[in-house]
Amino acid sequence: MAARIEIEGDRCIGAAQCVLSADKLFDQDEDGFVVVLNGEPDGEDLEDARTAAMICPSQSITVVED
Amino acid sequence: MSTTEQDAVPFLLRGPGKPFPPPEYVEMRGREGLARAVLPSGAPVWLVTRHEDVRMVLTDRRISSDPTHEGFPRPLKTGGVPSAKEVPGWFVSLDPPEHDRFRKALIPEFTVRRIRELRPAIQDVVDRSIDAMLAKGTDADLVEDFALSVPSLVISMLLGVPPVDRDFFEAKTKVLVTITSTDEERDRASEHLLRYINRLITLRTKRPGDDLLSRLIANGVFSLEELSGVAMLLLIAGHETTANNIALGAVTLLQNPEWIGDDRAVEELLRLHSVADIVALRVAVEDVEVGGQLIQAGEGIVPLMASANHDEKQFACPAHFDPSRSARAHVAFGYGVHQCLGQNLVRVEMELAYRTLFERVPTLRLAVPVEELPFKYDGVLYGLHALPVTW
Ligand code: HEM
Ligand code: SF4
Image (cartoon, rainbow over all chains, first blue to last red; front, side, top):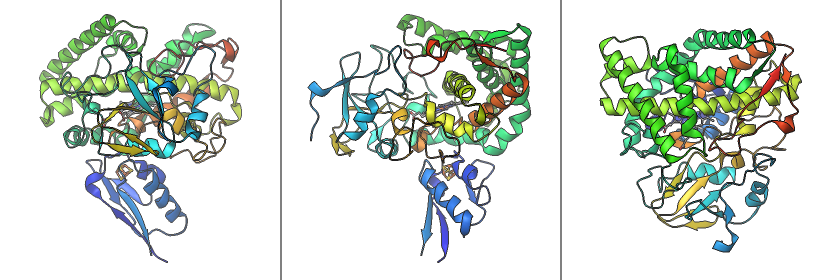
């Protein structure tokens, strides 16, 4: 079962909740917007990705699991 | 089930000697629909108490932050939250898309990386505040001598305000956030602050420094009027909020010393204390159903952050201080597009404040029993008027 991170970048408000919950998966660019470092997390990283998706205040992050 | 006016609860459920968050929130979360409250002005307002409903209110586009809309809640008889019409640049009162321009220009100043770069400067502020406190003897008011001065110095530094002016800042912002201030006092204080900031903008236009204001001036994204509004917002939004958290958190850590030195405490303290319970005021601009209750266009809404952060469906044993729990989903900084811009700065300020305070003053203790502490039930923000400590 593969999981994939999808971002709706234009909604991001740069709160960096994603970076704080999963700094291996997310970073901020110079302007403060979200950048995905690893879009196919597994194991613990997947858990962190789910947390980031849940707390992102602009609901920009979706973890698609199929 | 609809709620009738007879069921209305008072807007401010806090009171002397009462615990915070108000115990009434438990029952309000459990009941169907929403609770109806009456503001001091007599205007009715919907109180939103459940975590899920609070997050919905803060993300739904049918619900607005703009105080110029008919029905926007005004907790005080007059005055209240300024609109961006009254104070250009006051972007917390703007809805998207107008809000976006401000937020986008400011995000680079508050990225995790940028705040990390500020750590040494914040550490220096914390150290100097503790030096000054220790120099006074063997007791102090931790609110006045530490909790208020740290965020004030940090914001001053960020904006490029000379440190000599910080007492002035502290005094003026205090007037603005105290519920017992008269409207006249409040107006006068904001006038003084605005005038000062305008002078600072003139100074930084002529002599730019390595600070947020100088960079925003150079960017040219904002008009001068907007710049002063933005600076005022940063100043006011980040001062007492942080101070109250630092003070309340110090009490909680003194009562739970096993967690001193554990950085996980910060997130849990933010959740537990939720000082900005009634800060995010909203109004419905279209009919919208929240938590099973139809809210009509033009009705005021107050999502209660402290209630959401104590929702037992989201956080087990919510009144229990447990830094090992996952507190991240708290809404102490709000949610949605207005979620606190300064949150990562606050996290670092709190982390360094506690670590340094308890390392440098290991014998720190309360000078009076907890029950005798003057809790701030009469302000917009929850907190402490004073925190007598000794060492
Ligand atoms: C523990 C301390 C703090 C707490 C609890 C707090 C809480 C909040 C809350 C609840 C909101 C959302 C308001 C709404 O949705 O209407 C907010 C927004 C905001 N906060 Fe904070 N805040 C804190 C510290 C700071 C600091 C230090 C700064 C700046 C240096 C700051 C700047 C802002 C700004 C500019 C906004 C408006 C953001 C927007 O509209 O996009 N805050 N804060
Ligand atoms: S948590 Fe969401 S809003 Fe914040 S930086 Fe990450 S993607 Fe953007």
